Each structure stands twice: as structure tokens, then as C-alpha cells.
Amino acid sequence: MIGNKSSNINTVPHRPSATYPGETAVRAVKLTKIFGANVAVDSLDLEIRTGEVLGFLGPNGAGKTTAINMILGLLQPTSGHVELFGEKADWTQSEMRKRIGTLLDGVELYPYLSAKENLRVFRRALGGIPPHRINEVLNTVGLTSRADDRVSGFSQGMKRRLGLALSLLPDPDILILDEPANGLDPEGIKDLRDLLKGLARAGKGVFLSSHLLHEVEIICDRVVILRKGKVIAQGKVTELITEAPKIELAVEGTGEAEKILLAKPEVSSVSRTGNRLLVQYDSFTTHVPGISGALKDLDNCQRLAQQLNEDLASHGIFVHELIPHRGTLEEVFFDVLKEVK
Image (cartoon, rainbow, N blue to C red; front, side):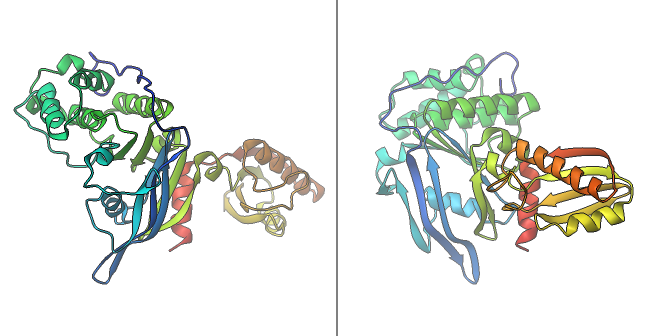
């Protein structure tokens, strides 16, 4: 459930769709927005695909909200354009707009209406949505037991759930969500995670802007990292977090060990704390025997550790403890931010 122990999120029903998994649903092409002398978004290219969750990351002021508003047609780009299923987006067409569901920060609800009445208002405003969708989306977000309660008595987490129900009302192909976990407790965040994964499995494309890096790592298939309006990193989560392996070791003679390791072409840096060293490897090294390509999995990291141990032992330096690190999305995020400063 999301924030209410009396109601659980149910499995997302599958519906036949004209889309297929992996289809590019939304494409931003060289989107740029300039406010005076400030380039808020600079030539942004990205794709939202059906059947997957795309994470959109960046520090405050990176241009994420501006980018989202341009993608949704709420803000006119200075240059560039948006395509929806291969056609240039025309948000004056109501049928095109119904293919995208949105949950943005500051969604306005009618506080003195019930959850169900709020959904009825939006259903009428959107037009062409069958009445049974109201009960379906309430069930999906776990608000069935509170359907007739006034929104003024809802917690922030319950309001976010109702906002998500509104975004699902037209049964869209794509969901664009800006900080959907705001106001949710840990249990509610887990339930939201399960729901978004279920929506992706059902064929929807989910675009998730969030500061919760750990959740993004768990939920998302791919991520795009933005800084000062520019994309500074993007790719599959599993690849990004394993591109540059790290190995921590405890050893006597740390100074000599550090010199030996830094002389190796595949080592990019070594940091020392007491008798412990943290060895960072180059993302694209090909110098380690038996390893080819970009060192993208834990097995390769373990083989690097074995090679490191043998190299130090050949110099008479013996390792007491050796720990391969797979890395986290949080580490990647802060590493790439440092690199582009």
C-alpha cells in the first residue's frame, strides 16, 4: 500500500496496446530553452521507451523541470522539438495528450470533494474516458477504501496516490512523474516502486524524475543525468554502476603498495585511509589479462582483485583483506558531477 495499511496496490491489469516493448514513445530532439543569458536546457536528446522505467536525475537547478515542461508542451522551447510515437507532438490534439499521463509537483486537487468525485471531475474534463476507469485507478493505487472520503482529510502521501490515479485515468501509454514519492513513508515508497515496475511490465513507458537515488537504482532500467542543462551521463543502470570497479584492501606498507598500484595503466586512482587503500580502475581499461571491454560486472571486479593480490605478492607485499565493490548509482551520480565541474 502507499501510506494506508487498509488498502493494497493491486497488480496492474494488462491491456492490448498498439505499442510494443522497447518502442520509442517520446523522443526529445535537441531541446533547448534560453531565459535571457541563462541556458536552462542545452540541446537535450532523450528517449522514453515503452516497457521500461527511465530515471531523470540532476542536482537542483539542473534544468529537469524546464525539460519536463517542454516535453509536455507546457513551455515553448527556444529550439528543438518533441516526437510522440514518431510524429512531431501536437498537444492541441486531445487524443495525443491522452497518451501521456503526468504527475507533477503541486498537482491541484479539490479538497472538499472526495477522491472519487475528484476523478469524476477530471474524467469529464478529459472526455471519452469510460466511468469504470475511476474504480480501476482507485484500486490500482490502493485508495478504494477511501474513495468517498474528502481529500481535505488526506495525508500528503494519500494526495500523491490520488495524483497518480489522475495520471492513470486515460490509460496512457507513457507516464511522466516528477518526484512521485514526495510525502510517502518507507512502506509507501516500496509500494510505489512495485506499482511502477508493474506498469512497465504491462507495457507502459515510465519517466521518473527523482532525488531518491537508491530508489532510482532499484526501479529504473536506464538513467539520464543532467547538470546545468546538459546531459553528462546516460545509460543502463546496470552498466553505469559497474563501469568503473573499485577494490578496497588492507595491507602493510601502504605507501609502497600505493606506488605499485598507481604505476599500473588500468588504475585511475588510489586513496589511502590508515592501512586501507581504495583502488579505482579505469572504466575502459583493456590491460588486465583475461578481461576485455569495459569491465561491467562483479565477476570482472573479482578477477581484478585476484590480479591485484598477485601483483602485490610478487613485490613481497601481502594483503590482509580484499573487498571488490560493485558500486552504486549514488557513487556514479556524484562522480560524474565532480568530473564536469
